[in-house]
Amino acid sequence: MKPRFFLLLFTAFLAPVHAADEDYTPGPDAMPKEEVPKGEVRQHTWTSEIFPGTIRDYWVYVPAQYDKEKPAALLVCQDGGGFVRENGAFRAPTVLDNLIHAGDIPVTIGIFINPGVVPAAKEGQEPRKNRSFEYDTLSDQYARFLLEEIIPEVEKTYRLTDDPKDRVICGNSSGAICAFTVAWERPESFGKVISHIGSFTNIRGGHVYPALIRKTEPKPIRVFLQDGENDLDNLHGNWPIANEQMAAALKFAGYDYRFVMGTGKHSSRHGGAIFPDTLRWIWEDWKESVAAK
Amino acid sequence: MKHQCLSALISGSLLLAGIGKAQDMPLRQVLIEGENWEVAAEGFNFADGLSTDADGNLYFSDVKGGTAVYKVDLDGRMTEFIKDAPGISGLQWGSDGRLYACVAREQRVVVFDADGKETELVNEVRPNDLVVTHDGNLYFTMTPTSEIRRIDPSGKMSVVSEGVVTKPNGITLSRDQGTLAVSDHGGKFVWAFRIEEDGSLGCPGNYMEMRTPVADPEIARGDGMATDVHGRYYVTTAEGLQMFDPTGRMGGVIATPDPEEMLVSVCFAGPDHSYLYVANGGKIYRRKTKTRGALFFEEPKPAEAPPK
Figure (tube, chains in turn blue, cyan):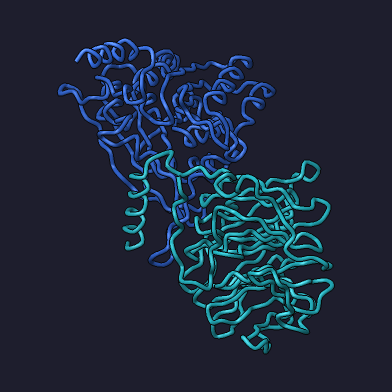
């Protein structure tokens, strides 16, 4: 009994210092509350022309407070299926319900998009997965896909603001570098980026961003970066070092940014646990921005 | 509607797979420590058209200097397999037990039966390299005209891609034979196409970006291609033998045996098809690997998960 008791004490002592990945869990802001009105989430399928032949699912979240007379703010999340999952790391619809109700963020429509696949032509064959091509490539192709295909489709039904300060783009891992690339290519369309465990590594050349940021006239983008000390170190690069480099470059170039380094792995858990606070920070200025209009 | 239902199913299953599950594939999954390139055959002008059969024998041509299709058996003995067959740039065995060939010099695509008897499939074409699916569709590249053509099992030829790949050169399939991959000798991408049910090509994508020479950043000189059982793609280039994972991410560049000579053709052959063979100038080199080649004359199979 004695050694086990000691072990218990020992791990209890270590826990706050070396939080394991599993210790990051969704907090109260990610739990449904009786008094908070629930938004609506609808699932759709899209066949793209910009990524020829690809199909994908996407979900549109519309808050209960949405008023068709007023353009809503926008949040676009890559790998969207994971963000809308009710028992997932993010539970984004519930978080948005709670934060909008509390007045912490503006009335926001969420678009949660999965990466594309080229479906197989015959039974027994596998679809061609287009995620890495869409997310890891440094080009404006994915930005054009959002701005020319998905967002206009959603705008057939809902009014969205065109003020980049009220348009956030977010993702995890390759979805995170994708989000950064969209804002980098189209800062007039997206002025805020949320990156969790961002793959600013050489999957398809994304390791060059810190160098580009340092030698490019700063763009009007507010950036939130999260990573974990135990994130990947593989053939593509070292994720914690790459995110440190991103943060240092953003600091050097004078960007409005925040960098949170935790102790997690290459998972959504830490980013999910702090997601409500991240949204509060990224929209810190929203009341001023509305008042100014 | 059927298509949409299918799509929802597919992306639903992708969602369950979650993020970060695409496996990383470094070179050490393929290369064996201490194993390097060794000469497998030499004395040629410009070796090309590397191909294998079910037993792992190697077949190839000497496109500039030779007059035969050569064979290297599992004991390393070389023979002239088909005599009087000069100027061949691409070879592959079909599931019908015949050997298909691009006769670049004579601007023909032909097929040899087991006795070496030649039958012409098409003429007045500019074939460079070819691949034959298990169900008997032959796709070949026409490098100078930016075309990919198909010869269907009845012998009818059609243009299946034109102007997409600048200088289409190497050509291979995914292991399940649903995707055709074509390297660009005049650009930096390996393009992926879906093979449609009718054998045409759809959904082109510049899926893999090859490493390029510093002095020539837009042109990788993509040439011969091969696929392994785990769905990885291999392509010979100016920078070496480049390996890509099934999702199109580069896994690494394997050094060219003799960097002074061009690296033009690659195939898996030898025992268990576990040796990489490359044509590199006047020599053919081989090296033992931890993987095995995909064989397109066999029934299509899904890519195997690599060992952890």
